[in-house]
Length: 254
Image (cartoon, rainbow, N blue to C red; front, side):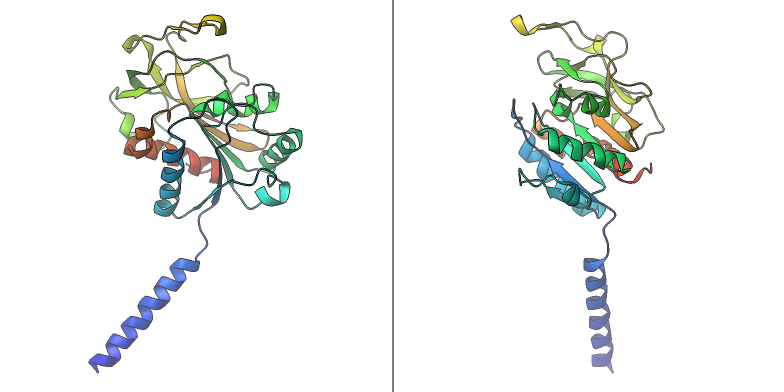
Protein backbone atom coordinates (compact mmCIF):
# COMPACT_ATOMS: atom_id res chain seq x y z
CA UNK A 1 0.00 0.00 0.00
CA UNK A 2 2.81 2.37 0.88
CA UNK A 3 4.47 1.60 -2.45
CA UNK A 4 1.24 2.49 -4.27
CA UNK A 5 0.98 5.83 -2.45
CA UNK A 6 4.60 6.64 -3.28
CA UNK A 7 3.98 5.78 -6.92
CA UNK A 8 0.91 8.04 -7.07
CA UNK A 9 2.89 10.85 -5.43
CA UNK A 10 5.71 10.39 -7.94
CA UNK A 11 3.28 10.56 -10.88
CA UNK A 12 1.64 13.69 -9.45
CA UNK A 13 5.02 15.42 -9.07
CA UNK A 14 5.99 14.53 -12.63
CA UNK A 15 2.72 15.86 -14.01
CA UNK A 16 3.13 19.08 -12.02
CA UNK A 17 6.68 19.57 -13.28
CA UNK A 18 5.63 18.88 -16.86
CA UNK A 19 2.66 21.25 -16.66
CA UNK A 20 4.80 24.03 -15.19
CA UNK A 21 7.50 23.55 -17.81
CA UNK A 22 5.04 23.77 -20.70
CA UNK A 23 2.75 26.47 -19.30
CA UNK A 24 2.59 29.64 -21.34
CA UNK A 25 4.75 32.40 -19.92
CA UNK A 26 3.25 35.78 -18.98
CA UNK A 27 4.85 37.51 -21.95
CA UNK A 28 7.97 37.53 -24.09
CA UNK A 29 10.64 40.27 -24.11
CA UNK A 30 13.34 41.03 -26.68
CA UNK A 31 16.58 42.54 -25.30
CA UNK A 32 18.46 44.89 -27.66
CA UNK A 33 22.01 45.81 -26.58
CA UNK A 34 23.48 47.23 -29.80
CA UNK A 35 25.97 50.06 -29.32
CA UNK A 36 27.39 52.46 -31.91
CA UNK A 37 29.10 54.67 -29.37
CA UNK A 38 29.91 54.30 -25.69
CA UNK A 39 29.83 50.69 -24.48
CA UNK A 40 28.65 50.50 -20.87
CA UNK A 41 30.38 48.12 -18.50
CA UNK A 42 26.98 47.29 -17.03
CA UNK A 43 25.70 45.68 -20.25
CA UNK A 44 26.69 42.15 -19.29
CA UNK A 45 25.29 42.52 -15.78
CA UNK A 46 22.11 43.97 -17.28
CA UNK A 47 21.53 41.03 -19.61
CA UNK A 48 22.04 38.54 -16.78
CA UNK A 49 19.71 40.52 -14.52
CA UNK A 50 16.95 40.67 -17.14
CA UNK A 51 17.24 36.94 -17.74
CA UNK A 52 17.04 36.35 -13.98
CA UNK A 53 14.00 38.63 -13.73
CA UNK A 54 12.40 36.54 -16.46
CA UNK A 55 13.00 33.31 -14.53
CA UNK A 56 11.69 34.76 -11.28
CA UNK A 57 8.62 36.37 -12.85
CA UNK A 58 7.74 33.69 -15.40
CA UNK A 59 8.32 35.51 -18.68
CA UNK A 60 10.72 34.88 -21.53
CA UNK A 61 13.69 37.18 -22.22
CA UNK A 62 15.50 36.72 -25.54
CA UNK A 63 18.74 38.48 -26.48
CA UNK A 64 18.66 39.88 -30.02
CA UNK A 65 21.82 38.65 -31.77
CA UNK A 66 21.03 38.56 -35.51
CA UNK A 67 21.78 41.98 -37.08
CA UNK A 68 19.53 41.17 -40.03
CA UNK A 69 16.79 39.51 -38.03
CA UNK A 70 14.81 42.55 -36.89
CA UNK A 71 11.75 41.98 -39.07
CA UNK A 72 7.99 42.28 -38.64
CA UNK A 73 7.66 38.50 -38.52
CA UNK A 74 10.39 38.11 -35.89
CA UNK A 75 9.26 40.85 -33.49
CA UNK A 76 5.59 39.79 -33.65
CA UNK A 77 6.30 37.08 -31.04
CA UNK A 78 7.31 39.66 -28.39
CA UNK A 79 5.13 41.86 -26.20
CA UNK A 80 7.94 44.25 -25.20
CA UNK A 81 11.28 45.31 -26.66
CA UNK A 82 13.92 46.43 -24.16
CA UNK A 83 16.72 48.79 -25.22
CA UNK A 84 19.44 48.04 -22.64
CA UNK A 85 22.17 50.71 -22.66
CA UNK A 86 22.06 51.08 -26.43
CA UNK A 87 23.93 54.00 -27.99
CA UNK A 88 24.13 55.71 -31.37
CA UNK A 89 22.32 54.83 -34.58
CA UNK A 90 21.56 51.15 -34.19
CA UNK A 91 18.79 50.60 -36.78
CA UNK A 92 18.70 51.17 -40.52
CA UNK A 93 15.62 52.77 -42.09
CA UNK A 94 13.87 49.42 -42.68
CA UNK A 95 14.40 48.35 -39.05
CA UNK A 96 13.10 51.71 -37.85
CA UNK A 97 9.85 51.09 -39.73
CA UNK A 98 9.63 47.63 -38.17
CA UNK A 99 9.94 49.20 -34.71
CA UNK A 100 7.30 51.82 -35.52
CA UNK A 101 4.82 49.21 -36.76
CA UNK A 102 5.56 47.08 -33.70
CA UNK A 103 4.56 49.86 -31.27
CA UNK A 104 1.60 50.85 -33.43
CA UNK A 105 0.31 47.27 -33.09
CA UNK A 106 -0.15 47.88 -29.35
CA UNK A 107 3.14 46.52 -28.00
CA UNK A 108 5.60 47.97 -25.47
CA UNK A 109 9.06 49.54 -25.24
CA UNK A 110 11.43 49.84 -22.27
CA UNK A 111 14.51 52.09 -22.38
CA UNK A 112 17.27 51.69 -19.82
CA UNK A 113 19.85 54.41 -19.16
CA UNK A 114 21.62 55.22 -22.45
CA UNK A 115 18.60 54.19 -24.51
CA UNK A 116 18.06 57.98 -24.43
CA UNK A 117 21.51 58.38 -26.05
CA UNK A 118 20.32 56.45 -29.10
CA UNK A 119 18.93 57.40 -32.54
CA UNK A 120 18.91 61.20 -32.14
CA UNK A 121 18.04 61.68 -35.81
CA UNK A 122 14.99 59.42 -35.65
CA UNK A 123 12.24 61.80 -34.59
CA UNK A 124 9.70 59.03 -33.89
CA UNK A 125 12.13 57.30 -31.52
CA UNK A 126 12.81 60.59 -29.70
CA UNK A 127 9.07 60.82 -29.01
CA UNK A 128 8.94 57.17 -27.97
CA UNK A 129 11.61 57.76 -25.32
CA UNK A 130 10.11 61.12 -24.35
CA UNK A 131 13.31 63.07 -23.61
CA UNK A 132 16.83 62.63 -24.91
CA UNK A 133 20.16 62.65 -23.10
CA UNK A 134 22.16 65.89 -23.26
CA UNK A 135 25.11 65.63 -20.85
CA UNK A 136 26.05 64.32 -17.42
CA UNK A 137 28.41 65.33 -14.61
CA UNK A 138 30.80 62.98 -12.81
CA UNK A 139 29.27 59.94 -11.14
CA UNK A 140 28.00 61.00 -7.72
CA UNK A 141 25.70 60.05 -4.87
CA UNK A 142 22.39 61.91 -4.73
CA UNK A 143 18.94 61.66 -3.16
CA UNK A 144 15.99 60.31 -5.14
CA UNK A 145 12.37 61.43 -4.89
CA UNK A 146 9.28 59.43 -5.81
CA UNK A 147 7.06 61.59 -8.03
CA UNK A 148 4.17 59.18 -8.66
CA UNK A 149 3.36 56.85 -5.78
CA UNK A 150 0.72 55.05 -7.87
CA UNK A 151 3.28 53.42 -10.14
CA UNK A 152 4.43 50.06 -8.73
CA UNK A 153 7.94 48.92 -7.88
CA UNK A 154 9.10 52.08 -6.11
CA UNK A 155 9.15 50.88 -2.50
CA UNK A 156 12.96 50.78 -2.44
CA UNK A 157 13.24 54.49 -3.30
CA UNK A 158 11.18 55.86 -0.41
CA UNK A 159 12.44 58.45 2.09
CA UNK A 160 14.91 60.25 -0.20
CA UNK A 161 16.99 57.17 -0.82
CA UNK A 162 20.65 57.85 -1.61
CA UNK A 163 21.74 56.46 -4.96
CA UNK A 164 25.02 56.58 -6.86
CA UNK A 165 24.74 56.87 -10.62
CA UNK A 166 25.55 58.84 -13.74
CA UNK A 167 22.92 61.57 -13.51
CA UNK A 168 21.70 62.35 -17.00
CA UNK A 169 20.62 65.87 -17.84
CA UNK A 170 17.88 65.71 -20.46
CA UNK A 171 16.78 67.99 -23.24
CA UNK A 172 13.19 69.23 -23.57
CA UNK A 173 10.18 66.98 -23.75
CA UNK A 174 9.73 65.52 -27.22
CA UNK A 175 6.06 64.82 -26.56
CA UNK A 176 3.44 65.90 -24.05
CA UNK A 177 1.76 63.80 -21.37
CA UNK A 178 4.84 62.08 -19.99
CA UNK A 179 4.03 60.59 -16.60
CA UNK A 180 7.03 61.10 -14.31
CA UNK A 181 7.66 58.60 -11.53
CA UNK A 182 11.19 59.28 -10.20
CA UNK A 183 13.35 62.39 -9.91
CA UNK A 184 16.77 63.24 -8.52
CA UNK A 185 17.27 66.12 -6.09
CA UNK A 186 19.90 68.38 -7.65
CA UNK A 187 20.54 70.11 -4.32
CA UNK A 188 22.15 66.85 -3.11
CA UNK A 189 24.86 66.71 -5.81
CA UNK A 190 26.80 68.92 -8.22
CA UNK A 191 25.01 68.82 -11.60
CA UNK A 192 27.51 70.98 -13.48
CA UNK A 193 29.36 69.38 -16.39
CA UNK A 194 31.89 70.73 -18.87
CA UNK A 195 32.71 68.62 -21.91
CA UNK A 196 34.68 71.32 -23.69
CA UNK A 197 33.70 71.58 -27.34
CA UNK A 198 30.82 69.16 -26.74
CA UNK A 199 29.07 71.59 -24.42
CA UNK A 200 28.28 72.29 -20.80
CA UNK A 201 25.59 71.24 -18.38
CA UNK A 202 24.06 73.27 -15.59
CA UNK A 203 21.50 70.75 -14.41
CA UNK A 204 17.74 70.81 -14.84
CA UNK A 205 16.82 72.86 -11.79
CA UNK A 206 14.07 72.21 -9.29
CA UNK A 207 12.59 69.26 -11.17
CA UNK A 208 15.01 66.71 -12.63
CA UNK A 209 13.13 63.60 -13.79
CA UNK A 210 14.93 60.29 -14.27
CA UNK A 211 12.08 57.83 -14.92
CA UNK A 212 8.74 58.11 -16.69
CA UNK A 213 6.18 56.30 -18.82
CA UNK A 214 3.54 57.18 -21.41
CA UNK A 215 1.21 55.79 -24.04
CA UNK A 216 2.54 56.47 -27.52
CA UNK A 217 1.39 55.80 -31.08
CA UNK A 218 -0.84 52.90 -30.10
CA UNK A 219 1.63 51.29 -27.70
CA UNK A 220 3.44 51.93 -24.40
CA UNK A 221 6.87 53.27 -23.42
CA UNK A 222 8.72 53.20 -20.10
CA UNK A 223 12.14 54.78 -19.52
CA UNK A 224 14.53 54.85 -16.57
CA UNK A 225 17.86 56.69 -16.50
CA UNK A 226 19.21 54.42 -13.76
CA UNK A 227 21.42 51.54 -14.82
CA UNK A 228 24.88 52.98 -15.48
CA UNK A 229 26.58 51.04 -12.69
CA UNK A 230 26.98 47.25 -12.98
CA UNK A 231 25.97 47.02 -9.31
CA UNK A 232 22.57 48.57 -10.14
CA UNK A 233 21.58 45.25 -11.68
CA UNK A 234 21.97 43.40 -8.39
CA UNK A 235 20.12 45.99 -6.29
CA UNK A 236 16.59 44.85 -5.31
CA UNK A 237 15.23 48.42 -5.41
CA UNK A 238 16.35 48.92 -9.00
CA UNK A 239 15.23 45.45 -10.11
CA UNK A 240 11.74 46.01 -8.66
CA UNK A 241 11.58 49.38 -10.43
CA UNK A 242 12.75 47.82 -13.68
CA UNK A 243 10.36 44.88 -13.57
CA UNK A 244 7.41 47.17 -12.84
CA UNK A 245 8.25 49.12 -16.00
CA UNK A 246 8.71 45.97 -18.08
CA UNK A 247 5.45 44.48 -16.82
CA UNK A 248 3.49 47.65 -17.59
CA UNK A 249 5.03 48.06 -21.04
CA UNK A 250 4.36 44.42 -21.92
CA UNK A 251 0.84 44.11 -20.53
CA UNK A 252 -0.56 47.60 -19.92
CA UNK A 253 -1.25 46.62 -16.31
CA UNK A 254 0.16 48.17 -13.16
